Length: 254
Ligand SMILES: NC(=O)c1ccc[n+]([C@@H]2O[C@H](COP(=O)([O-])OP(=O)(O)OC[C@H]3O[C@@H](n4cnc5c(N)ncnc54)[C@H](O)[C@@H]3O)[C@@H](O)[C@H]2O)c1
Image: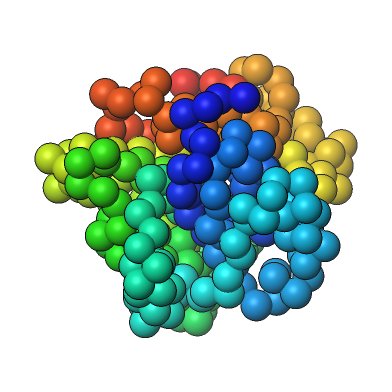
């Protein structure tokens, strides 16, 4: 167990999604206190997981409903933490949504939905949570972008725009907050094999097409991203900020 995270306070958005659950359990297993955020629907749906984590890790998993597209909801959430004198050490902006559609079929509503969660949510979470970070001990903000934040792909225009926005937002925030020893980095996964995506990603036609673009010839696993999040959260990356780390088996190297 990495003792560096013992009793550290970590916020994870989208904590009940596939990746969010993996990141949550990793920090909990190292003794951290995890403040998870997700939608009302996800909290209802995953109440057994929340219970299991609290039983296993001494009630250190505090999951709240907070819609990160609502700036006032983010403020209210952070106000409560502040009133309880809780300093935050790490923020993982992980919540994200996508839809597959040709650009000509994307509606204004589709665009707003995706940009609001992926980009606006990431910015306003960072803006509010940075004020809960201790300016002496510093902090780490980790934004989950995508390989599609660097290259384009078909049927994903709003998603690509939002994830590209995250990569450059990361650089802008790293400049402003470096003087407080607060680092901001992004992670760019390739396709992650999850229980939700498996059926699609393993379809013979899709598998052949997607895998040929990944030199390592395999999809990303949740643990591959969890390892990168842990790296950016810990002291081992104390001189690294503003970076976009591709965890992509070489997809972006071509
Ligand atoms: N799965 C992949 O192949 C893949 C690849 C590259 C990047 N990513 C990125 O990784 C992150 C996690 O992806 P995942 O596969 O775990 O997705 P997921 O759908 O399993 O999880 C996303 C979580 O975000 C939550 N969420 C959505 N809108 C929210 C809102 N308004 N407020 C609060 N929470 C909200 C959802 O309820 C869900 O629990 C996303 O940012 C995604 O874009 C995923």
